[in-house]
Amino acid sequence: MVRRPRIGLNHGLQHRKASRPGERDPDPPDPTHHLPMRYTNCVEDAGGLPLGFPIVGPETLRAILDELDGVVLIGGPDVPPSEYGEDVDGSEILMLPERVAFDKALIAALDERPDTPVLAICAGHQQLHVARGGTLVQHVPAVYGTAVRHRREPDAVRAPLHEVRVEPDSRLARILGGTRFETASAHHQAVKTPGRGLRSVAWAPDGVLEASEDPSRRFLISVQWHPEMTREAETTRRLFTAFVDACRKR
Image (cartoon, rainbow, N blue to C red; front, side):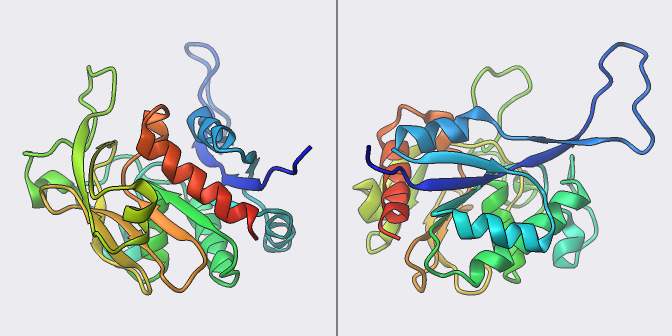
């Protein structure tokens, strides 16, 4: 059997909820790891072996990365504005401090491993930019208006779709086989000032930055949209296949 590339996916983190009405949460609350199946499904569809990994210490993190062929940085809650030197203005549910610190350490460790392919998605895309000195728009409608819907309405079943325009000479355009397509979004923050070494390569019609890539690495693409929410789409298949193929060639 052909060995499948080992693709690591960082976990999200949330406070444990009471199991029964009226039950008190522990004090302090007990955070729990979680990893949505949509991400692992897409990695598996593309021929990768999805391996979720929890929040761990620096030495264990290095040991984990030594065993992986690539890493997906998954989505999540809002990146705390304090991470890029601003006060909270429009944030809703902030990422827990333990995950913020771990993701920063993870990104720093990956920056020291330029041959390790990385695919960053939504909050992972934002965390990557912030870790490299970038900043975020804290509430997209306040800056870009509401002509383009970037997040699901409270009563909607699915995330909204909107068009994305990709720079023709980008690696992303070559992977997707075109420069215009629809994406699913579920965010209200966006990159304002790009991080170091990250080239902006895709935008929504309202100007929101939708994708970046690092030309100095063998493979690093970060997207603001959620490709895993459109698992059957050709663009999702192409993106995850290109990523897993890059991991296979490591």
